[in-house]
Length: 404
Image (cartoon, rainbow, N blue to C red; front, side):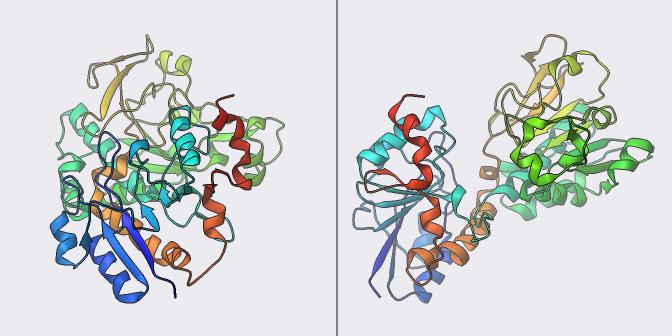
């Protein structure tokens, strides 16, 4: 087969992301498996896996990646670092017409780059094959518990980014001491699954939504809520998930009964802007909700949860929301809602998150790149190619041209 050279780029977004698409061990495994593959890794001073770790696996380090056919990163690549007429894989954040990345897409097209966006790599039945969702849930729930410890003064956890890996983070959870705390988790995908892992490790017991509403407990509990719990059809007809996904504007909020029984809200749901708002500013200002902490892993700014007024950062993950004024304040002031809304949570456990992500790439994507399998996956995820938008992404034409 024709030789293919894949390069792993140095992350150029600020602040730098420590994650990698493939770990040193995974690179070595691929080279041993595929005779027609060559791998180059651009040196980096801030990756979670050091250059020396790649070198120890006999992976070639090279500043110059111009000989590569395919270039892989994690976050958006700076415009000036893009090499013309190459295939790139990274999270581009352009397919939803994000205004802050319009220029990036314009440069990608101008340089004749084939842009394959990880977010749209799907199996033939439409399921995503690579994602960091589980790790967002793991770190987000951990951050929520850490915030509660700081707020209550009951216990203290090391920041997730100071933990070497998941194993050390799980050891930290032994410090968690909760009494009659009630936690609501929304969502049912990878993100929620990761959050539930942490709650279980912390020894918090799960109850079903009905018991959460109706019963009292002498210990900490959590419940997980699906869309049919926190929304219902305006027409009064039975909830239909497929209909909800297609017509979210035809549903209205039914989350408040749960909010009235919740101390910590961990938001892991997918939210469409046409979906009903879950907690309004008026609901928070009324003073009747016991929610004192929101770990908004979904991080929809000014979206379904009024207290999420901005994204926070790994370095400064918490801020306060004053329900009386709707303004930001110190995170642990008396009477405020503490908000955790970090928008790049997997970056706090980069070694584990990278290993998990790389394993999915090896299973589902690398064979497609190397021509040993072709399910059409790369085509479905290619936003641009040969100096223009591909047919599935033609709807971005006005966005690309700056007309919207």
